[in-house]
Image (cartoon, rainbow, N blue to C red; front, side, top):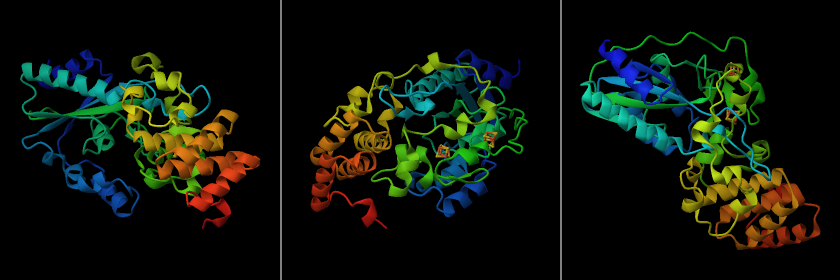
Length: 362
Ligand code: SF4
Ligand code: SF4
């Protein structure tokens, strides 16, 4: 076996479904990324701006780096819904994949070191300064779709990526994998916020995944209704993708986190929640308590029920976060405006300056 084949074999032994090698050089889509960023499509994600030099040229991440080993691991394609309503994107519903992938990348690096195939190395999961889909496509792990995700012939959109930068030269694998969206436009048609502005271009500030996970502060009023029942992330553009229909169902691999399997959005609004305990081991810790409670209030407005009304009324007066109080007011106005008690509470909130009725907004 040659050096490259040994490296790929070790990756598969450690549980990665997909593995390929790309040269450590500027990603094929570097110019597109720069234009996307310059046009404001990544607005709010300051880290992208800060890391843009390293993203454009990953050789800056690890001096002496020569190759990029890209791995893929399939995850569940089954829809996940909370008991009382509210949906969580599939990639976030189970154990935190950052930990799963991070630990295995370390093991992989150690095995490659023993085989003399690593040199200095650095492991990266999706929080790293890398245009990982572009490099993964170059390594033959799929093709970039109209929804700007990576599609693999077997796994469709339902897999995670991880990367190891290696200080050894390994011959790149064949790529990109054959495939294209053809004439399909299902993802563009289904997106409730029209965030996919054109094939391959997602305007992040309008994307529900960005809004519910990355965005801090209030969610723009016009985008709250289209969020529907997505409380963390959004899978709509992947759900409709024909490439994912025959993907293996790997629901057991990451399981379903207790807060998702048994949780209720009403409890996500509880005061002073110990988020680090309740969401231990879950990617749902990412947006912090304020973000999760804000999202829960919006979904409870879009999908009104009695328990939600009680919880929103309490939050409206008691929550320490103005962002959460304002989202609760919006949820009450959207879902329970006809209730006399709600109307009174909203009037009081307006007088306190916690909320503006829809009719008074621009
Ligand atoms: S994740 Fe949802 S909001 Fe974002 S582009 Fe896909 S369908 Fe649109
Ligand atoms: S839904 Fe259709 S257009 Fe969108 S990514 Fe899948 S194949 Fe491509």
